[in-house]
Amino acid sequence: MTAYQNLDQQFIGGQWQQGGSIHTIQNFNPYTQQEIFTLQAASTEDVDSAYQAALAAFEQGALTSVQVRKGLIQNLANIIQRRREEIVDWLIQESGSTRFKANLEVDASLGIIQESAKFPDLIQPEELESRDPARKSIVIRKPLGVIAVISPWNFPFHLSMRSVITAIACGNTVVLKPASDTPVTGGTLLGKLFEEAGTPHGVLNVVVGAGKEIGDYFVEHPIPKMISFTGSTEVGQGVGSKALSSSRMKRLALELGGNAPLVILDDADLDLAVELTVMGRFMHQGQICMSTNRVIVDQSLHDAYVDKLIERVKTIPVGDPNLPETIIGPIINQSQVEKHCKIIEHAKQLDAQLVYEGGIEGNVVAPHIFTHVDPYFEIAQEESFGPILPILKADDEEHALNLANNSRFGLSSAICTSNIERGERFAAQIDAGMTHINGITVADQPNAPFGGEKNSGLGRFNGRWIFEEFTRTHWMTLPKQ
Image (tube, rainbow, N blue to C red):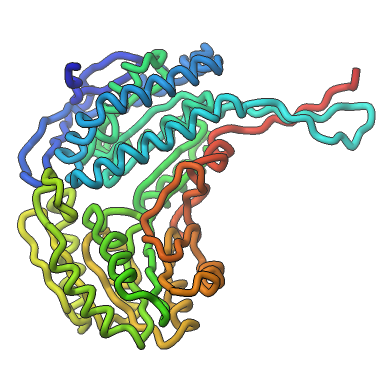
């Protein structure tokens, strides 16, 4: 089986072509900082072509057949399983994923593909009880049309696939714009996989371009009926504003930033609490929207927990993401590393105590742990998206809950306790979309609703929830025969 070639091109209307922009995008390996390739960026004309191709495929009924969609989904799953190592290698090379995380990402993608296989059969009319005895009342479910997908660089393959395959399974066509840091794993690799799976021309189109050149145009374009965006809250708010104020208002699915707390109650098992912290915060270098961004620990356990955590963190393998034992690999780019340095320095200036300093070498940022953190410090309020951990001390359970909810974000959360019923009561009071009792904050199941409250987004992904988002209802009444 030959590895995919020409992944540095745009995929529009079933054809691979160079971008039309005068600008280029350099694709770097985050660990070695060596260039992988330079790509000719997409222009606004390329965006037009991609949307026109997607619209033509939809209007011509390329995905009308349930059997075509089901066959495509099964073919795609089989191809990903056969090409698993090729995909994993690209995730390591381009996104800085450790081998462990890259395999998790492929598994997550296969999970959502399997879940999407249910969707073609769900687009059925439903008869409602009619309040008019002379008329029937029916709800028809339809695909939306063209869906625009903007995906991030942290879990590029899964977070692109999550929207793309579910949209297509529901009968929509797609234009995908991946992050510039991960044009292959978030974009052109999917183009190759769908092409090999036999996807009709125009059903999936991939445009790789600079946000400053095509970003606004991509969102404000009149053709897409929905924008599915995953990324930062600040960018997501701009996307939402533009989508709603454009000439044709669009539906929105926004999965944005987080500030996930791990709350350690006074009856917690400290060994478990430490493991939840390590995997919840340091997996993929903390570059996960659900990552444990702060720990809130009861004062009675605080000192013992910190001591255990520091000893455990010293054993975490850091460095080359290609080595099977590595847990913490590189940060995506130098700009993000500089951001982490500023976060660390700012916390120190505010007199937070840096109790563990793992060091920084190249793009590899090792763990940094702070105590004596005021809940209003920036490090406790904003998403760092890196292996930086603030630990907050709670006076009691009520104080811990107040600290957990003291955030403009509300994506994921976790609780560590030996009393599950107590944990359930506590979890129900957290203002977030997801909570895991004695589990890590980083969790995603393809049939469970994924999404947040407050500034963490709008809508839910996965299972029947994304099916509802990516389809529309059409109410019809007719005389009874």
